[in-house]
Image 1: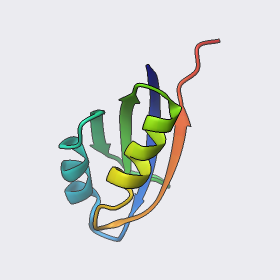
Image 2: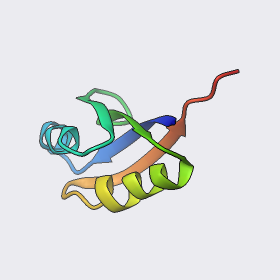
Image 3: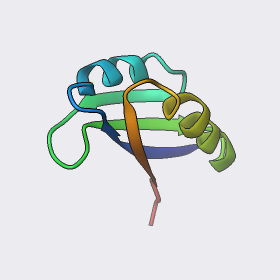
Length: 77
């Protein structure tokens, strides 16, 4: 199991809508609208890194209102 934080920049005024839409995606465990350089922070999980990539690219990035994402896989050091 791979887990990651996905930092999302949205179009102006779209953070709450985007966070709500992302919460409905399978594999997303949490999505919160925040302030700062990113507008939504998402916690997601997938079976492997390839599945995580598909989740981000095919499901999250395709939502209306998303300008950019940055995926940060969680590591156990």
